[in-house]
Length: 214
Image (cartoon, rainbow, N blue to C red; front, side, top):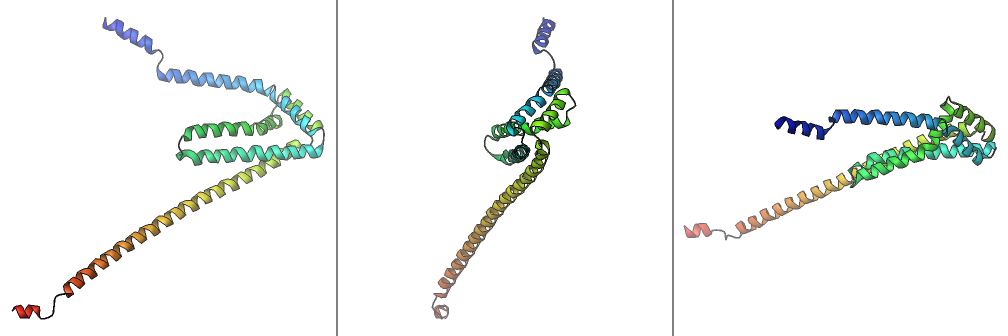
């Protein structure tokens, strides 16, 4: 009976944890690879057509849209990633971090789709390049410049945020030090006052009283 019970327990447990993790990792990799090939065959051409509709064949419009996407879609995700680290001590920080990470991924998508056109080797990427060359000239180069500017702005934001928070911590420490010093001075003053009171009580004894008693 004991062997039968042990066999039923093992059957209920199923696969060991390491096997479940391995299967989950392999399944995730397979899904990502399939999604990559599906998106690589669709996204570059689709995104190039959307950009072409915005630029409408104009060089100035292509440059302006490229700068806009490059700056915003680089600066905002980097700033959100910096905030993910900053809110780690907040209440419900896990929910905030997941939300910020999802928003950062959503905002950076235009740059990633442009990158799929520039770096892609498939037919969709080449078709996207041709569409951008004709209907959105200047967009790719402006996107690169905008991404660099956005990265610089994000670094400035992160450094400014760090310095602001450091200044706040320094001010808090300075206030605490001043408060502690004030309390110490109050305790010292109270001790001196007590010593003066004791001195006055000792000085209230009339002179010669000890000799009169003698």
